[in-house]
Amino acid sequence: MTFILLYNHHEFQEKLNYLLQKLVHSCCALDACVFDVMKGDGFRNLAKTLFGVGRGSNTSSIEITDLLLHPTTISRNITRLYEEYKIHLIDICEQFTSFCLIVDQCTEAHTGISYCGIALRYVGEYSQLFTFIIGCFPYNAASHSAQHLREFVNKILEEYKLQLDSTKFVVTDNEPKMLPAFREQCSRVGCADHYLNKQLQHAFQSDQIHLNKNTIEKVDCELVQNIFNQVKKVVSSVRHSHQEQKFSQKFQTYSETRFGSAIIMLDIFREEILDAVSEDQQPSLHRVIPLRQYLMNKCEVKEEESAAIIRLEVVLGHMRDKCDLIHPRCRSCLNNLMDGQTHDCSNVVRCAQCDGHHQSLSNECEKVAEYRFKLKEQVTNAISTGKLHRLVPQDRAQPMQF
Image: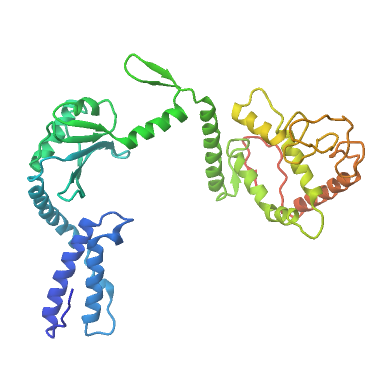
């Protein structure tokens, strides 16, 4: 695009305003997708024009607000521009011998108004796929029945001189009203995304599915559904914890959002724990042992737990009875495991810290007792200095201070 500097300032300003007005209208009409606006032709032409105007101006600086149009001016011309493109699209549709429609419905939650969206696709002469969004129209039919839906779509297609028959295709979801609405005078194709979404929905949420009117099949995904429900609770609690951090008080104790206070508490000394465990100048095994023992205690299988959790506990906690998976030594006698499968335990208890005849985490071990004493001192000091807060049961009606 070439720009010529006009010495007549008035003539230059008129041509500039006309050009900008045309390009701004085109940008708003064609590039309405917020995330892809900079990839559209309308935006690129507008940016190129603004850059050219800056080069052709006889002033050293230009205020961009003086060049851009007011939103009211743009809105007045969008309808006119839309009608121009609609006439052009009708001329294209008249040449179609076969095409595919995409039809879907939705209801706006706040206003309750239902809409019907229709898109058009066809394959050009050189096997190139073209897509046109005909529009998202307020659904004003007498009812939401299949008959009225089909009549509504046919009426819109008549405006574009299109008509459905056996050579035309329609892509819809699998809702009950969509199936009979496009059963005749067209070839209906089920939406692949809708199929996949329904399969996932059944797998994670449904107890049974209806294969047809007379056949019901049980969904055997209890294990997956249990995990899914647990993950939902965790995600919900994490979201609540983020919201609770904005308040100075808790409004209810021992609720599901109690998980949020645990995150806040752990975050206080998170960095200190990482630094201590990652120490490379002196041994730090004694710091890890209590955490490891806590994990082992949690790995005790309970009958009421799900199969997935039980399997996880078995994998984490045991290889065979009292033998550890992670470390190739028996938990009780500390003898090495040769093949990792069989082990003849001597049943003589030994401490992993001092090699004494007691449990590795027993207070009989001097190293463990010393570590626990120091840990208790550190916790007490953290509480007294305000770095850590003691969590005590409180009445539900009273908020908990942080």
